[in-house]
Amino acid sequence: MELKTVKKRITLLATLTAVLLGVVWFFSSLGDSRSDGKAVEAAPARYGDTLGFKPHRLELQRFIEQKLVGEAGVYTNYKETDEAAEVATGHETLSESAGLLMRYYVLTGQKDAFDTVWSRAKQTLATEAGFSYRYSPLLDKKYPVNAVVDDLRINRALYEAETAFGDAYGQEADRYGDLVFEHNVQQDKLFDFYDITYGTTNDFLTLCYADFQSIRLLDASSKDKRKLENKLLEIVSGGYLSDKFPFYETRYEYATDTYGDHEGEISTIESLLTVLSLAEIGKERAPSITYIKKVVEAGTLYGRYDREGKPVTDIQSTAAYAIAAMIGSTIGDKGLYEDSIHRMEQYRIEDGTSPINGSFGNAATEEVYSFDNLLALLAYAY
Image (tube, rainbow, N blue to C red):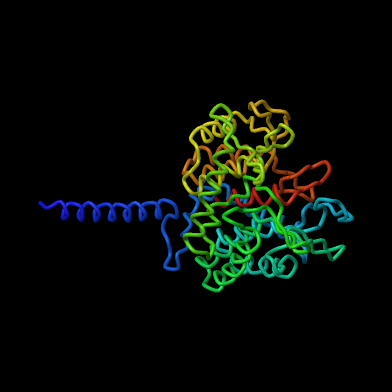
């Protein structure tokens, strides 16, 4: 065979190999895709109803709808305040809450309820750059800053609603998703927030804000999403602490290429959210799952740890066990899901004389926070 012919065949083989590798990467990275190029989300295992938790789910839903929701949206806390603190309190509403409740209603097929939450969110939270992270009804104040993780969650709920209820929701998601790429993504970097007043972002990424599945659903080119995902995977993977304590750093500083934490402490909820985000795209680490299963089974999933994995508090939370349950459902581990829900229900109020009966809160003070209750509600639906 002539040398020229051999070279041609080698070149052709190399080209075909490159094409095949590209196809394999594309599908392994993005999963199944729709005709418009967006990833199709894998549904959670939906263990909640089959394991008998539906009555508690419906009771919590009723509490939220009747006592934790006002004209502006979900209250941050059942107990009202003057809404003047540096952080959201009282009957202020958050973009975080809107996205969580929207995801719950779409997962449980409640279109009218979904439409109500989405309508309120557009009225009280929508801005020219996405969604305000916080709105105060008392002050009639819409804060000029978004939280990209919440914007991504709202967009995800809209894409899920497109699949469940119809195309119009996807069109709205496309529009708001474009704003994420316009304001919170720069040079393949994702930033926590964008300030409309100053037209600028912060300079770091909170690792649990890297919501990979939601990013895959955005109406952006596959190339742009792939580059962003690669960068985020590099950052998140670099924040892995160790196989001994398989949680994650809190924050990554772009300018210095360094990680930071909460003054030497690791937040359990933030690390669990990072593990969940990785699990949704099949990138979770086995030691993380093994560790979570162990501490959930033992009932020792504490709120904060030092960097070596020693608890620095004995406080546990509804939210942490709810996220652990969602991880279990996402990876198809029924045991982890069920154990986590049972642990979560330790914080459920079961007192027919209490105004917060059926919720997750403090029976003595009647403090009931949206984050805990909405994550519990969503966990029940997984």
